[in-house]
Length: 459
Image (cartoon, rainbow, N blue to C red; front, side, top):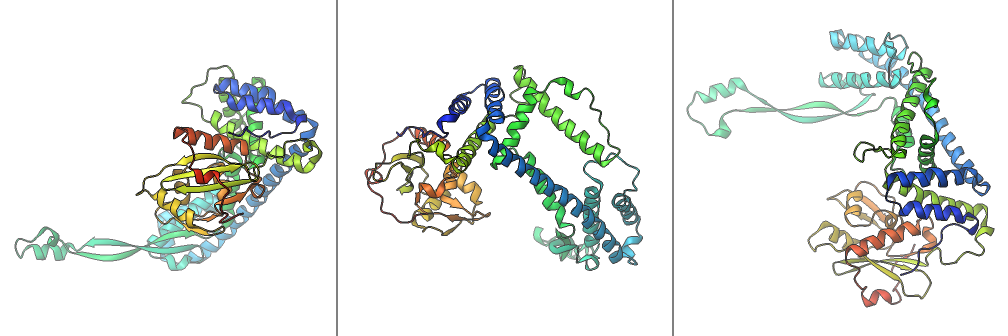
């Protein structure tokens, strides 16, 4: 097999050693000791990496600025939507009920910052949005949906109502079969299918989640997670001495929530540092997740340095990027091949061996006949589930698939030039396919796979 290609230039040799050591570590405490005592200090202090650090900081600040703009837009949209909603319902019978009058009063206090309950998390306008959504659902269910059509999309579902009078009359006629014991009327009940007001809130929630998404593969988000781990490892307990939790104002509330999140991270990391952590209890600092973070960061650093300082790579091995990737279905065996140099025999890996009757085998048959750029449908399963079951997730997915939706994915082709997929972490890719190959007891590849490929599609 081909040796794993070197990722970083010689001037960053220590970082390569630290990364290799961390990725081989199995003990949680020892792993984070390498990350927080070697890797993160090296990255934060090395002058070669300053452009990359600035890029990450800029992207993070741009994201925070976007969240700030969305918060202002959401507050304005919720306030305006509430005024319009009141106008639409004004004078109707439904608002005369006790529930609606109390609900509208509650929303009014929230959108105008007049509520006596100060300890809200999240913000008042987000709570107001939820009240308004519940109110709209109630209005629609009470058959007044025509008053608020600009706020919601309305759908209908069937409901069966037993006709008691008719049932009693029919039962007096004598013994009946079970299915004739009752008669029913079929009606359609309206319900809210989608809320249309304050669209900025949904975008805001998505952007907020991105900051805390531990499964994200966006480099600056990954770097942010590693910085959190580094901070939690290095910070002393005295940091929290003068921090008091207060919720009277939005600013105090935001600070208090930040300190609570920091304290939670700090406590878990300190338990790891002192080897007092529980394998079941903590989940913020998973070793497998943070190994993936390191691999993503390594790839990002390599690509960024190759742009900012290409002279660092002049003496590097030219085979770091493979010449070609190949995918091949041989009866019920799916093989993956990496051709490191043009004309050289590829390294081959058996990555899946499905049954003839399985959905994954049907998926493989579609792939084996597909052309580059073709959309592949999977009506019986979601694409994400099918790709995972087919052992085509991870770095392999980045090579052969793109533009995925729930039940459809764009296929890049069976033969892919390595340069076309330079965002792939080759080191991690080799580890993934090697593990799959070993799981099938490392069989010898079929003879035709070692020959020169008949190019069917390229990307």
